[in-house]
Amino acid sequence: MADFEIFGLCLGAALIGIAVFWVLKRHLLKMRCTAQVVGTVIGTDDDYRAGDGFFTTNYYVEFRYSVDGVEYVKNPRVSGRQCSKMKDGQEITVFYDPSKPKRCYVKEIKFRIGLTISFIIIGACCIWTVYETMQL
Image (cartoon, rainbow, N blue to C red; front, side, top):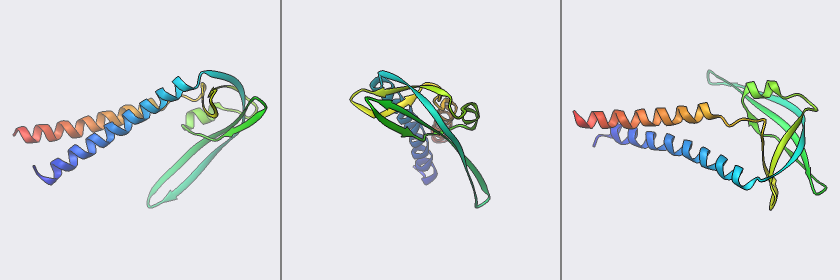
């Protein structure tokens, strides 16, 4: 087996593994976070970085929620489209883990399914290319 074939298999398996990890992580989070509370968006931010010819913008939505008198503040990274939909003072639905209220997810922030599907497709193409090369 040639080096490029090993690389292709490893790359494909890694991309599919990352995508599966993201899906399982989100699924487990949804299973654990069964209680809900109303939270409030307290800010949105974009972090623009330029370097080495690549321009990257990361979008964040900061929100807070209270459980049993304890206030929690989170600042997850979101897509630009989702960030533009969130406004300061907006009420959101926060699902949290009753045994660990710090662990939560927001109903209004959607899972990045497009990126996950892209990783699966690219990974499968890498593996398929190696398979086809080995058949010749």
